[in-house]
Structure formats: C-alpha cells, structure tokens
Length: 273
Ligand code: 5IU
Image (tube, rainbow, N blue to C red; front, side, top):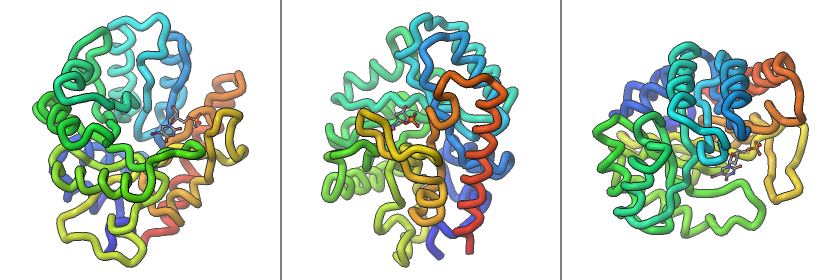
C-alpha cells in the first residue's frame, strides 16, 4: 500500500529518526498537518504570534536570521512554547555549502541552530557531503533533515533530474534525511500507484499554500491544502502570510490558523484509504 494512503500514526512507528517520529505523533495527537511559517522580524511579535497559533500547529517554521533583536532568551522562550503547545521547531536555514562549512553554520555562530531546531533543511546542490556534514552534528542530537527537491517560486531550477538526484541522495542517508521540501509527492515515493520499497517512507513538506491568494508580487505561487495534500500526496502544508499577514489582530490570526488546520486535516482524511 503506498505510504501516502497510510495514517500518520501508522507511519510514525516506521521511522527510526526521532524527529520524524515525534512530528508524525504530534500531527496525529493535534489533528494538525499545518506548519506555520512565522516570518516576522521582532522578537516580541514573533513570540506573541507563536503563542497564539501554537494550539493549531504541529511545526513552527523559523527564519531565525531575520529577527532584529535576537538573543538567547528568544530560544528559551520558543522552547518553552514548543512544550506548552506541543509542536516541533523547523529552522528553514536552507544550507547550501560544503560539509565543513555547514557543520560550523549548523552548530556555531550566534544562532547555534542544531541546539534548538528539531528539523532543518538543505539544498542538494553541493552533493552528498552536505548531508554527511550536517549529520555529524544532527544525528547525535536526534535531529532530522529535509532536502529541497522542489521550490514554490516561479521559474525554480529544482525540477526533473535535479529533483531525482535529491531523492537518490536522501535514500543513501535515511537515518538523518526524513523527507523533502517539494510541491508534490514525487514519482516513486509511495505515490501515483508506485509501490514504495517496503521500508521506505519520506515526509513531503510543502510551502506555497494559500486559500485566498494565487501568489505575491515576488514570484511566490500558492495552491490550496486540498491540491497539496489530497491530490499531491504531501504530508505537511506550510502557511505563512495566509495566517499572520496583513497586520491583523491576534484573534484573527487564530481564526485563520484554525481554518488552515481544518482544511489541511480534511484533505488528509480525503486521501486515506
Ligand atoms: N518557502 C517557500 N517556498 C519554497 C521554500 C520555502 O515559500 O519553495 I524551500 C518559505 C518562504 C517562507 C514560507 O518562509 O516558506 C512561505 O511563506 P508565505 O506562506 O508567506 O508565502
């Protein structure tokens, strides 16, 4: 049976990577396949939004380097909120350098990403050494890595043989690579009638999701939760401005978060066989 027609709970038990297992368990527990991308630039506002949307999300996605008044206390508070609301943390760092450099970027510097982010991601462009580098830091900490197989932006070069190359790289490092950032479940990853290898499962996490807009003025392209999860076979939707955008108040942000949670979950139930 293709992996994408199995329940999140059933799949959780099959992952050896702790971050993947925990994420699937949280998703089932909270009935949420919604990852919220909180791309705001002030610590206070960031924490306020995260606290407000925490109940509706399985995963908070950060761009920690856009926060102007970053300090270690922000991380302490973010970790507290992740316990309070039961969500995981995904720093959308998009590593793209040689192994030695990404080791330093992942573990050192101001942000020390590996010390607090359950999941992070990397471009496949440098080849397998980016995975072995990041794994040397992340595996001992129980972290998980997503490879960028596709992007949501117009004219993205990540397609065809590039995407296939990313899948091959992931298959060689299944203890650490838990899945992909992609627009759909790719051919051969338990979808479209293709029977996946018995022990193979990868999470598909999809950005570029919006219910009310088709894109922005800078090349972003949006699809609906139904298109992404029910038709495309993706496991987690990423929503940013569709939830916090437009300078709306906290109750409105919460209403929107619940709307995307419910839509994402409905789309997941629609594809279960
Ligand atoms: N993001 C994308 N597309 C991608 C990848 C990451 O939009 O292909 I990889 C990030 C960028 C932003 C969030 O942090 O996901 C989407 O935000 P909006 O929902 O506000 O467009």
